[in-house]
Each structure stands twice: as C-alpha cells, then as structure tokens.
Length: 196
Length: 192
Image 1 (cartoon, rainbow over the protein chains, first blue to last red):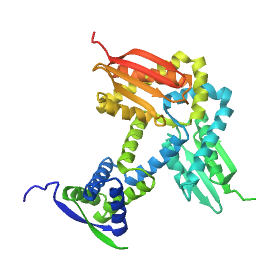
Image 2: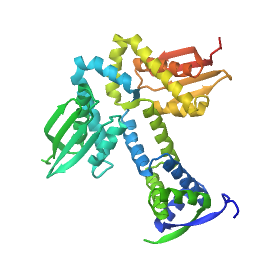
Image 3: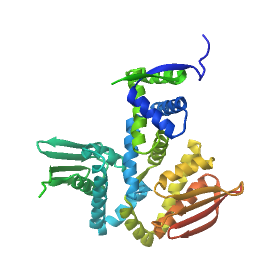
Image 4: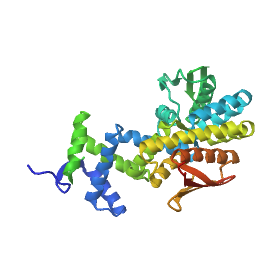
C-alpha cells in the first residue's frame, strides 16, 4: 500500500447548512474552499492535541473579551496579593466597592450575550484568576444559591471575591437575600428582583 | 436536516477519526463540532486561528502566574505602593519579569522576536501600541503607549521588561519613561 499524500481526499458527511456557511466564509476570506476546510480541521486537531475542546476555547475567548473590554490588566498574582495586603487594612472599603463595580460591569456585558448568564459564573471567575474548588449557582425554588469555595483564599481575597460576585448577580437581575462570608467560603442566596 | 458530502484531505480525516475514536465519538460528531464552531466564531467576528492563538497566549500568561485584575482597582493600589514601597515594588516586578524571561527561554520563544512580542502582548492585551523592533542585530527597541497608563504602572512595567530581557541575555542601553509612554532599548549583554 502506498503512502498517503496530502492530496488524497476522503469524504465527510456534514449538514448542508454547515457546508453552505463554510463556503460563505471561505468566499469572504478569498480562500479556496478545500484549503479553508483543511485549515479549519488542522486548527481543530491542534486544539484537540493539547487536550482542549473548541467549545472551551470559544467560551474562554468570549469571557476574556469581556475582561479586556472593561480594561483589566494582566498582573502577577503574587504582586497583586502583596498590594492587597498593603492597602486592604486602610482602604478595604474602597477596594470592595471597586470590585463590586467591576462585577456589575462584567455582569451587564454577559447579560447582553447570554440568556442565562449564571451558567457562565464559574468560567468567568476562573478566567479572572479565581482558582476555586467550587463555584456553583443552584436553583432553589425561585431563588438561586451561589457558593464559592477555596481553602487557599485569604480573608481579604474572600471579601473581594464576594463583592465581585455580588456585582455580577446584581447585573443579572438578582437581589441578595442572605449572605455568608468566612475565609475561603462564600454563600449567597439571591432572588430575582421584581420590576416596579 | 439535509447532509452533504465534503471532500477533505485524507490525512486530516484520518487524524480526526483517531480523535473521535479516542474520545468515544463518531467521525460525524467530531467533524461537525469543529466546523460548527467555525460558524459560531464567524458570527462573533473572529477566525478560529485567532481564537486558538489568543487562548494559547492567555494560557501562557496564566501558567506564568498572571491574572487579569480590574484596572480601576489596580491603579488605586499601585499608586499607593509606588509612593510607599517604590523600591520593593520595582524589585518585585523585575524579579517577575526575570521569571517570565526564563519561561520564554524554556518554552523556546525567547530568541524569536515575533513570538516574544505575541507572548508579551498577552500581558498587555488591551494596549494597541506595543512593539518590539529589531534595530541593529544586537539591539531591540520596546515601544509601548497607552493614555491610560499611570506613572506608577509605566515604571513597574519598565522594571518587568528589564527583568525579562535581562533573563534573555540583554542589558538596558536606554530608557524613557513617562506617564502613558514607555520606550526601552536593550542590547545583547557582553559576555564577561
């Protein structure tokens, strides 16, 4: 059996609407259709080879875009931790307010893109560098219970994270009914705000 | 839903088939997942290759211990630290840059200016003007501008880049820092 050359072709079964969509993009980019399909599959294979999924990458891209558009800066976690330690004692209230405001802005951005933005909570927190053991939003009757747990968070970090989450849920249209916050654990019970 | 046959390179189809069987999926399922994502990303106005590249860069920054911090929070605390602990902070940013320089070196893109620029753009993701320019064979110029940069941030960023380039075997030849503007010239360090 001879070696396969890159020119050999195989047929793939694909939904017609996907084929026409791909043709449209290839035409718009001025690329030959076959080449465009090869490029797409190659890029997908690179993603799979690294152990990711395309969905994961597309979601991360979208959430990173939210952070980027709101003017986040990429900073060493170590330096940020030091800065927080330094300033938190005297200006904790200012920092908490700023974190809340940032959460609200992120939330408003997500609301415009997602039908149920609460689903994106864990992903967004992970993108923002909050490496949590648990971040969940569970429906309880008409309320939503949010839990964030990480044993490595300091008291300051936990309080800042809680304000970020409170800002997010406010933008998602929820009010806080009950809140608990101790080092490494946040628990919020939220209910949908009524429109007056 | 109608279906069509699509001709694709055999070697690629075989690889997709391999991925599918490894993941317990069908060739049809994996192919469609890949192709449908291209359509989804196109609706977002981006190309798949761009998204993959951005993800890799953001992963590299995360692996380097960096996280996105709200700008409004960061400038507040950095300005304070600049007044109270300037030297300590400059040293810390320099060390951080040194670590990242080593990271680039280990990852194999420390000597490729274009790859290095892409990596650094991961740190400066919302800055439109960031360039690494090869001057003479021994010189690299770094230019970065953003009206939003505070004086403290420019100083810290300068120190970070000094650490990074030092780890890559360069020494600082010239430095111009002012609010919103950073210009650095690095030269390959002479071996003692």
